[in-house]
Image 1 (cartoon, rainbow, N blue to C red):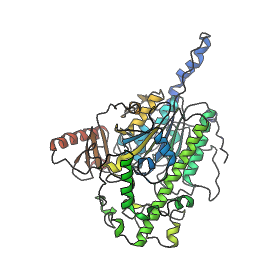
Image 2 (cartoon, rainbow, N blue to C red; image 1 turned 60 degrees about the vertical axis):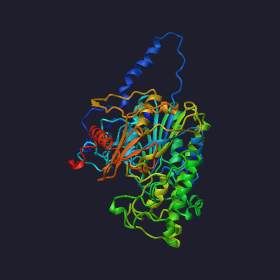
Image 3 (cartoon, rainbow, N blue to C red; image 1 turned 60 degrees about the horizontal axis):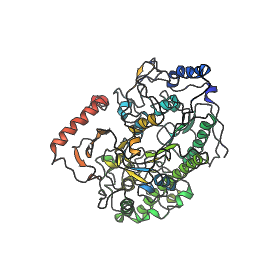
Image 4 (cartoon, rainbow, N blue to C red; image 1 turned 90 degrees about the horizontal axis):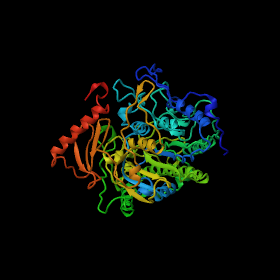
Length: 581
């Protein structure tokens, strides 16, 4: 398909970043928060005038700033891609890992909205106002969308001369009057404003911003979101070249989040793969992880039945052993996982399209590509998954219904049994602060800036570090103020030292979501489920969190629980909505 042309945004005069919204009224605020680009206009103008009076001999041109391609998967488990132990075909991600770095201890923020807020702003989610989802409350940490005292990577890099584009899942708006991607620094956007919807139906779920920009046309049966995201990624890269600017592109797939939708040819690739069941898949993944050096020999699997304290997750009991299920249930579950795997493979295919395009235009060497997931694998809502718009009902599919699973007519998740396999070898899932909820695959590929190829990194990293990294490599300025609004300082540390296998300067990392909470200090991690007691683990020796040392080291529990409390107060975790502790 021929790429759609995109008009020059400077000529079009469309509104850009800097629209501010009141957290309470959702109407445009009277706070004067002018766009970062406007603030940088005067020095730019001076820079244009001064050369008229400069000597004839000009200094050498500055080297081209690195491009940044930030790729986010949705509900992808730690072991779901090939280079992290999975059997799912992901050759393009595997190649990026083989020619770059894989981080063994990189963390997200447990769930869709909090992770996206943290990734975009370089802050902990509650500092950005997105401690929960998009539901709005009076509590400062739970406003439902990034607040005026934050800036996004797109805003900071656009002010530094970058073309900025986003494709995919935004999930950072709390209603029609709250900011969209093009209000927060992105020149171009195509994707979904909300959290999940059909992968096969464009209208009314997917939108093009700014309004009026060229939009591709697809045949009635020709729309599939991951493929379309690949199309627009190439369009927006072409526009950056047209403007002769370095680019920052945020490619946020909605795969493999439910509803599990995939193309028939991709599903057929996995028709038999998962009939062996999650017990054997988990064991095979761990064996591969040990073989490729991701974990040491002797690393255990988490308990199969380790699920959750939430009663609404337990209608069918805890995760059963595969051999205890009847034939019909196994067929239903194997099909669900086959569709999930097909979604991951299609996402990988489109990542390959983008990488090929960068290679074709000679841009790959100077492009930092980062790949990660927003949270651990999704257990919603029980071992067998759900059917319907976000559950909770489960349908056992047989016959023709079974063959239809994954099509536009259907709506499924895959449940906690497969999510447990997705997070191999870790405990727990999306929503939770145990490693299965927060540890993500993280691939960094940048031939010009990363000398190592195929190596691992053990420095603990976090979403908050991506902003700091982009500011440093883009020679950008993170502002103290935007207009009259003081901007919350960055929380992260640059990952550039870790790329060179040097330590990162960091005291601690911390998490909270739905009263689940954790803090990591060095090799030690304190973690608790909502309403539960603190557990203490040596994450270096016990990454699967199997040996709780809290009873043996009560003084450490007290010390780090106090440190978590201090962090929670500073970062707006507390007070909780409604003032509850």
